[in-house]
Amino acid sequence: MVNIHPNALEALAVTRIVTLAMQPGTLLEPSIPIGDKGVSFDGHISVYKDNSLKKSSLLGRVPVQVKGKAVEKFSSLQTKYSKLELDDLRNYYNEGGVIFFVCEVMENGNVEVFAKILLPLDLKALIDGYGQQQTTTINLNHVKDLKTLTAICNHFLKEQRRQPVGHIGKHSFHSRKYEKFTVSRISFAPSKEQSTFVNHEMYFYGVDDGIEFPIGLMKFEEFANEGTTYIEINGVLTPYHYKLSELRETDEIILEHSFLISHNRKTKSVRFKLLNFYTLESYQKVLSLLEKIEQDKSVSMFDGSIEITDLKWDDGDYAEIEEGITWLRNMTRVYDKIGIPHDYVSKGTYENLNDYLQSLTEAFIDGNYDSVIKNYPSDIGMLYIRLGEDHILTFYSPNEVEKLQSVAGESFKDKEISLRFDESLEQFKISPFLLVDPEGLLTAANVTLELVKDSFKPDSHVYNKFTYQKTNQFCLECLNAYDKTKLVDYLYLVETIYDHLLANKISEGDYSIAAINYYQTLYRKDKVLSENKLQHIVEIKENPENVEDIMLRLCCNVLLQNVLESKYYFNKLNSKQTEDFLTFPIYTLYQQLVDEV
Figure: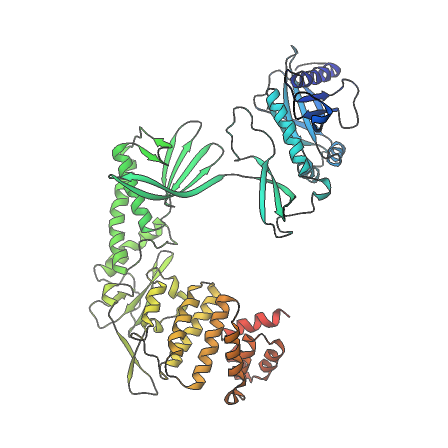
């Protein structure tokens, strides 16, 4: 254990800082007396614009505290100090901060300087987190030369002006609507450390109307960049989506959300890993890249800024890739047969999709449906089939050779479905999607919004007084599905259907109901209705033929945002009407209206 008298320790520490600061060309003027200490502070360092050190070039004074620490061996980049007292921290805070120096002193008299900037945001965090031991620990970085010391002092003065003590603790991320946020590094990077934001605390400021407000400290655990890079595959530059993350010791590149390249900056080692299945298209690109890497033993990315060469594979590694390529061919056949877009983002993993691959192949390629249908229905209709965490929508027809058809497949494309309605002896052509529960419709892997919208065009779906009821009910179920899932495609679908419905011949009563449902769809989508639409709602409400229609007048008042009248008509509903109203999607808007009061 090194034994140095406290007075000698203090003198050596202060002398080293003064010597470091007072060199030719310096912009610093230390005033740190030996043996004549003030309360909590040992002195200050004056900082100047130029080396004249005149009063006219003074930028400011930095309060300092200096501690000596006897050591047998110098720390390399950082040292710790754990004897800070709460009263000192409060005094530093009230004075607007301090630069805290710890000087490591060896028995031969050699000294190395370490420093920590403590500004109001730092000190507030230390004071708030002060433990029962009545002490706390800070990390201090090495000050190797005058340039580093000058940079520390200038940084202190710059950030101190941005952190008035009266503003500390008064502002948070959510306390006001900021125009933007800015961050500033708390301290300086040790000389051998990579210059990076990663794993370093930052001062965090909010800016409103040109005024900065100190919010607190934040720390980036990773620094990420996302975009597109081009990699040459078989002589063709192929775009790959990437996310580049800089962690403490490694750079991680995720290509196509599916393939991880991890590069350790210290050991220079490289690790590859296939991640979860994302899209078929992504998986195809990743396997193409792996084939290239296996052949060329290298890969170049980001216009050559990252080059990985001399790669070696063992037999086990490449066997996994060959297995993946075979799997990809089989899954591509299934996707194409079912009509799943290659860019569909799967919710499942490679493992659970693999579990379903064989049964889907048997059903849609080989025509054996036992693995996907446990209980065969007796009538035609729509069936949802599981695909791992996803699902697909199919049409089941027991009397056809191809009993199960994907609604997006070629065999289903020209299929016509007609229904006979009770009021008519005639059959009318309808969209096949009218037969399905809408809640899972637009999340099915093989269903797109355009596919469903096209099926409701007038040449594919008849709009008249007979088909009105079922068509309107489908739209209401879609609105309920939107309220549950918030998937906006439901609103686009319903808007399209009502556009067609209102342009065709239906009764005046049906037209009024359809118009109200159309307007509640637009209100959900746009959060507001135009003056013309509001005027039309008033006309529907005041139409003499609707005076006795309590339900219709209630719905009109909800869309007109008439709280008192909405409550009035709601209370006039009989028990059956109330039971029905609670199931209608406009009840959600009614609840929102009355809850706001």
